[in-house]
Every structure is written in structure tokens, then in C-alpha cells.
Length: 202
Ligand SMILES: Cc1cc2nc3c(=O)[nH]c(=O)nc-3n(C[C@H](O)[C@H](O)[C@H](O)COP(=O)(O)O)c2cc1C
Image 1 (tube, rainbow, N blue to C red):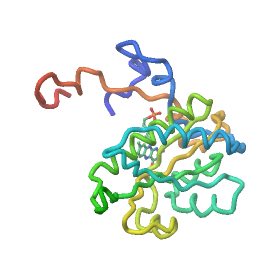
Image 2 (cartoon, helix red, strand yellow):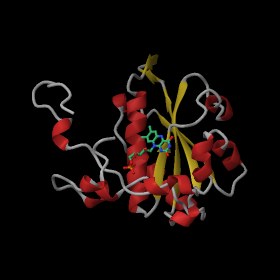
Image 3 (cartoon, protein in one colour):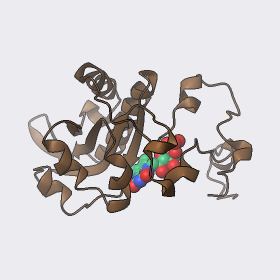
Image 4 (cartoon, rainbow, N blue to C red):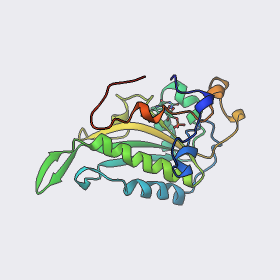
């Protein structure tokens, strides 16, 4: 991406809480266990995310690295992602329920994916505040995931997420070394529009 240069890396244009800028998605992880209490705190943060109708459609399936389920969840990732994600302390799949019972009627929750995204963001932010790195992963077997995760067709699967303590480059395959650094963001003026959408400037 053209904005992704060392020049504008991770500098806020306007004052924000430093934790927004300091969070970044490391691939190099130590593989050490994460206490359940920390993982539950991250899920708790996700629980307080806003959602359409307050339907709270987000669901999580997770496995600690030292559990039997870890290999099954890791096995869903594509080879490239598996090559570093095997050092995660836990892998979490972010799901959502697509329907909702409202006044006795089952209705579709059009915002289920959006709501799951908001919940993942809260999860990631809380993890950062606890000193963990998270990384969302869209590169997984989207056909096999609902089967392996035992999902009914009322539920969608969005991303896998790794969580763990950040490690040094020696814990990461060399092919990722150059990318193991915080990335930049497009300038603010390129995506905010007053009054009406004014087209893409860059
Ligand atoms: C929906 C989604 C899918 C992603 N898929 C992958 C992936 O398959 N592999 C990977 O290494 N990173 C993946 N990422 C991580 C992004 O590349 C990363 O969040 C982005 O470059 C911004 O960097 P930052 O999170 O460090 O700020 C994904 C992120 C999101 C939100």
C-alpha cells in the first residue's frame, strides 16, 4: 500500500489515546501459555461492543496452544499463516450468528459481520492493554472452517485471530522479517468527507 512507508509510520495526525497507535499485529510470538483469566478479559471487552438491536451476534471458538483443539484450529489456516501462527498462545475464530429472535420472530441481523468486527476490535485493544499482540487472519480454509468448527448455517465465520506475547525475529520465519514492524495508515483527509462523498482522492 502506497501509504505504508517508514516516513509516516504510526504517527497520529490528531491527539488520540496512545494505545490506538501503539497496537500492532505482530507475527513473531513466544508461544508461551496465556492464562485463561487474560483471555477471558479480552472476551469480556468484546462483550461490551455495540451491536445492531443489541443482538450481540459475535461468537468465538478458541483453543489454547497446549490443548488438543489447537492443532485442529491451526490446521484451518493456509500454509503461510500456519508457518508463524503455530507460535500463538491461543487461536480464536471470530464468528457471528446471522439471525436473531425479536418479539418472538426470527429476523436476519444485517449488521452481524459489522458487529463481529466491532467485537474483534475491542478484543484486540484489550489484548494490547494487557501486553499481548493479536493478528487477524483471513487466510484460512473458508469451506472447511464451518465443518471443523461445527457451525450451523445460521452462523458465519469471519477471521481467525492469534494472540500471544511478542517475540524477537529469531522466533519468526525469515520471509516475514521485513514486515515485522508497525504499519502506517492512509492520511485522514483521504477518507473523511463532509456532507457528501467526494470520491477517492488517492
Ligand atoms: C480481515 C483481516 C484479515 C487479515 N488476514 C491476514 C492474513 O491472512 N495473514 C496475515 O498475516 N495478516 C492478516 N491480517 C492482518 C493485517 O494485514 C493487519 O492488521 C494490517 O496490515 C494492519 O496492521 P496492524 O494490525 O499491525 O496495524 C488481516 C487483518 C484483517 C482485519
